[in-house]
Image 1 (cartoon, rainbow over the protein chains, first blue to last red):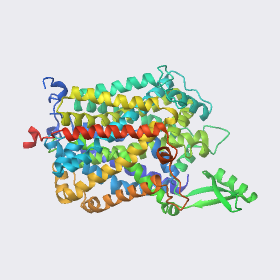
Image 2 (image 1 turned 135 degrees about the horizontal axis):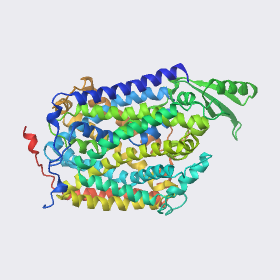
Image 3 (image 1 turned 45 degrees about the vertical axis):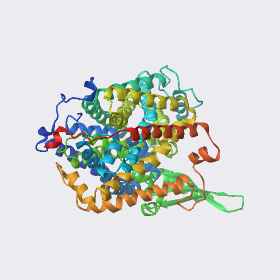
Image 4 (image 1 turned 90 degrees about the vertical axis):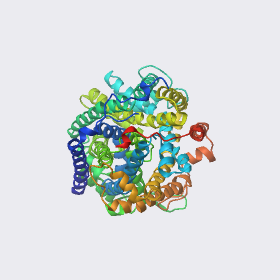
Length: 51
Length: 573
């Protein structure tokens, strides 16, 4: 593997891994995330048999 | 009213939809074929110019349609544009996932079958040819109807199992079925991928007689920006010299040996290909854009449906970016370091170059796993990983159809699941029966992914940038957003992305349909055109008829459907 190969590989893998980790961190730490959670009790068409 | 249970759940579901066989098998092959480092430059540019913009547009348009109770692509596109014409263009967003499901579930069954066979100790191959023979018998590649069998070394039983699994999960609904499964499947997939990654990176040079075939050189084959190629001279009938690629060389030992050989033989020549010369090849740009496009599942009809189940104040910008980055991590970070280097370490350049998705996944890698220490476990882990990735994708292919049937026919989920189950079972039976040379699968895949997906993505980005308007589109996207889309994406989404897509589409027509070469070679029709118009092939023609019949069925229902808005109670917040 050449030096160019190492550089491209480290930059590519490093950038997508950093973006992935940052996004997951932002999603899990976002303020008000609790308020956006819907309950499993929400009615769904598969539970609605009368229509 | 259906909805997602949590933001992480919808992100994992969208990422699960995108992460599939393409991340672990197609991407490494494409990257290596088109110049490794050079390919990655084009790949990341395509991610910025078409991947992310279309992804954000789809998330925003979908959530906007969902506010008034629309969950299907025809309903959403007709509603957000205020025009029935776009409802008919939205039909493509139902045809694509429904038709792809018909063959994707078949491939999903291969993955489960391979995982089970590794566990059962049935996968002991000395050569790639042996592995290829097993694959051919397993999927019935030698003759129509041969795939229908229910033994452990035949695909039938596994197909039945995965078909039922998909419909049980989809019947359970958005949060209790899709989200529940993805919340467990995606982390499991990450763990399995990391285990395999560690195994591959610690292989060293596993074949003592070929020390040049090492994992490090395998990584070089995948990532080196400059290539060393050995050319061989032949003379054609008119006496003209032709220099053809004999092999690519990776590793100091192999290059030095080839240099000595070329010095002694005037019919051999060693040439270097720089990164910049590779970037001048239009095929590389098309391949990179195509990989981004298909990998992210944009223009697929899935994201628009999934995001329609969000609350109006739920973020879509960060969620879209998070789902994209999850897919990219799996593709570049895991797929890019695993499959090709593993194949190279055992077989060298000749064993992995130009093998294609199925060749690499179902011929090369089974042989590689069967040869490595602990191969039964690692083989099982790899194919179970592919199976999980495939299920999370196939589930996403069913939901647009379910949403469409519920909306167009005003029926409940139970009824829509039954109808979609019948339609997809009929289509899948067709694909499985015409298994000779995987002709039906290959033909449907070619026309749906290359033609319909690009058209739908173009329609969606034009709706976002021009019909809704990029300013209003940004305002819709930013409602409840946890992060902001950088302003320069306004220009990108209005001008660059549509232009990029139109160029891709034009180049595809020019090259793959009309048969002209992008690099100056002679005109040659692709096998798909030959099968339909020059030397008609029954399976190929019937495959196109299956697509057209599915399209006609969906068009008929769209014409009869009322598509009345049903505002969500939460939309009044």
